[in-house]
Amino acid sequence: MSTADADQIEHLRRLWDQYGRLLTVVIVAVLAGLLGKHFYGSYQQRQATEAAALFAAYQQPPAGQTADALAAQLRAQYPRTSYASFVALAQAKQAVEAGKLDMAEQHLRWVVEHAGEPTDRALASLRLARLLLDQGKAQAAQDALGKDIPATSPALAELRGDIARAQDRLQDARQAYQEALAGLPPESGQAALIKLKLDALGQP
Image 1: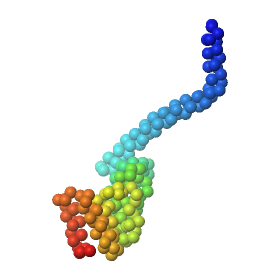
Image 2: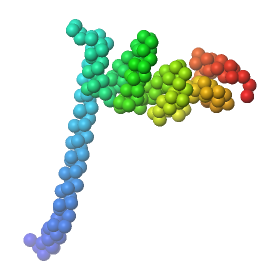
Image 3: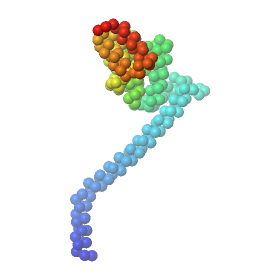
Image 4: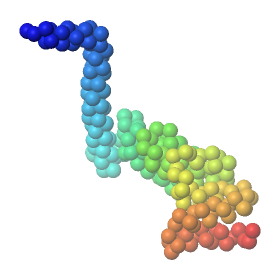
C-alpha cells in the first residue's frame, strides 16, 4: 500500500469518526420516514376500502342489519372518510324532510367537525347555514359559514346575500347577489333565481 493510499484511508477514518454517528442518524431517519409514509398510505387505503364496504351495506342493508346501525358504525369507525360524511349528510336531509330540524343540525355540525375533506366540510357548512337561516337565525347562519367554503363560490355569495337581506342590510345583499351572478352562467336557473332576488331589493 502506498503512502498516498494510507493517507486517504486515514482521512476517511477520521471523517467517519467525526461524522459517522450523524450520518447513521440521518439514514435511519430517512428510512423511517419512507417506511412511515408507505404504511400510512396503506392504512389510508385500507380505511377507505373498509368504509366503502360499510357505505354499500348502508345503502342496501343485509338481512338482520339496519341502515341506522350501519350509519352509526361507519361514523364511529371511519369519521374522517367521505363515506361517513355522505351518510351524515343523507341523515340530515332525512331529518329535514321529517321536520326534525334540531337533529338535522346535529348531523351537519358533525360533518363540519369530523370530515377529513375540505369539500365535505364546505358542503355541510353551506347546508347548515341555510338550515339556520330558514329558521330565522340569521346571525347563527352567518357564523356557520366556515373557512372551507371557497371564497369565490356563487353558492356562498348567494347565501351571504340572503343573510344580509334577512338582517335588512340591503346594500350588502345587493353586492353579494351581484357577486353570485358573476360566477354563474347567465342562462342558468340559479342565475335567474338570484336576479329575481336582486330585483326584489329595488333600486339602491
